[in-house]
Amino acid sequence: MFESVTRPLRWVLGATEHEVVQSVHEARDIEVKMLGAVHAIETATASIERHVEMIETLATSIDPLRGSVDRLAETLEQLVTLLAPLAAAEHDVERLRHLFGRRRHD
Image 1 (cartoon, rainbow, N blue to C red):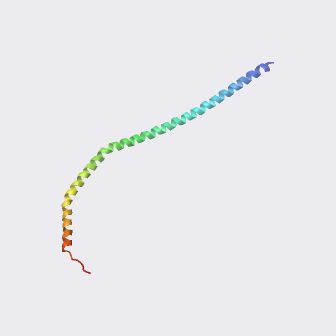
Image 2 (cartoon, rainbow, N blue to C red):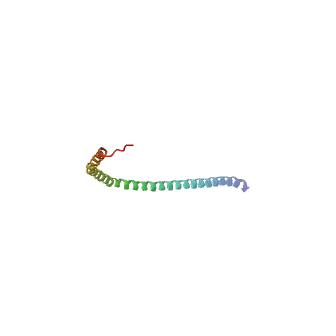
Image 3 (cartoon, rainbow, N blue to C red):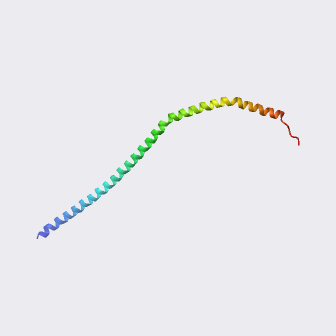
């Protein structure tokens, strides 16, 4: 007699328990995926921070580099100015050599 009353009640409780267990498993799966996503975001953030640090380092080195290039250009201009007369003299010597040089006759 009690079995006719308890059987449907057990069936409802069993089905409800199954749904609760399934919901808990789904919630755990979602939590695992969210933790994975959070970890990926943390890794990406750390990578971006390293890139920003490198870009800042490059940005601070531009002005000293520009100064070095300017000084190099000035030095090269001075060298060209100093060496121009020497190059002209060498050219004149070569012309004189050619003018007074011996010519071989075969």
